[in-house]
Amino acid sequence: MRCIDKPLYNTICGYIEKDQYETLDIDDIRCISSIEIDTSEFINYLGIRSKLKGYRYIKESIYIELLRDTKYDIKEDSTTIATIANKNNTEKTNIERSIRYAIQDLKKNRDYEELNQILGRDIFSKNDIPTNMEFVFCAAEKIRNSKTRISPYMSKIH
Image 1 (tube, rainbow, N blue to C red):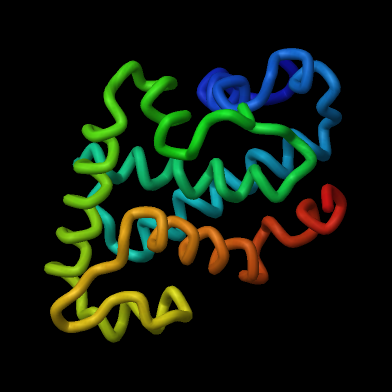
Image 2: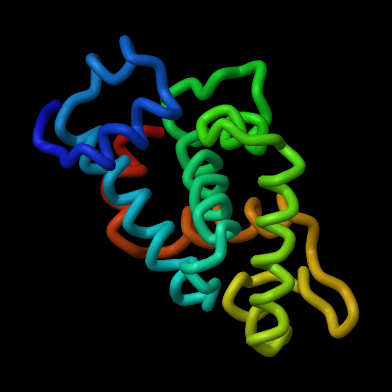
């Protein structure tokens, strides 16, 4: 491992091939670390409770979607949920149910108009909640477009 902690190394290797990891330079590693930090900060800001299983799965889903915009290939034959299910040795339905519950809990604990404002889209309404992937894509887009630590590194990778 080069200049990164073990959890980040395991996260990176969970989504990119081993030989791809060997070709990463320090700026790539900083970018990936920045993506993980920005994802964590954003979902904490939204108010998703970290004690829920869905918190971890939403974090991983957003993280995968952000990595897809970089030069790294994520197992082409897998969808986001299938990738997370394989990594966590569980069923896709368990992942989907946990994410759904976390989104419902978020809506219950926060005003839907405020959530729409934070996400920059009207995906929540008084009676409806977004689909799991609609929420994930919207959150990933918001993080990608934000002017946070991620910006200097993302411009290098594109």
